[in-house]
Length: 199
Figure (cartoon, rainbow, N blue to C red):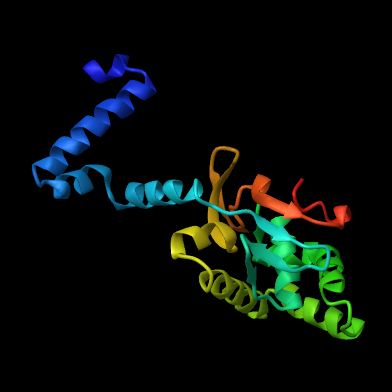
């Protein structure tokens, strides 16, 4: 095959020529078939990545994307800060391992709230039999979707990522991680460096 000796840049150039030829011939159906829907979705997300705006978190825990404020209640901010601090992702079933960290974030975002109420709220969030964490992630998603399109929002929300793990030669399992895929260099944290959000 003549393409095996091409550099990646040359392959991309050839692909562009072929894609434009198919498009000019009115055969975008063949282009879609060749690339496949998952690849096109990946390309759309990649195209959006270059237009992402910074997420700025002020010293008093207000969240802004560009000049628009993200409407989040203190508990939603605490959940968001937890996942932002863990770019590797967290499994919902292991949230109890992060109880102290989540409590610390919640105490900072809800300074006027009763501490007992905060502890009670955290207990609901880390309980694997309670649906509270799913509800909170859904509300976070809605807040970002109110400000931007679905593809842009996919970088800011807490979304699913499945990671395959292999132990030895016979045991395979999957980690169902929840992550925020926003590149951390786009996160601007004002004030409290103790949170380690952008590290």
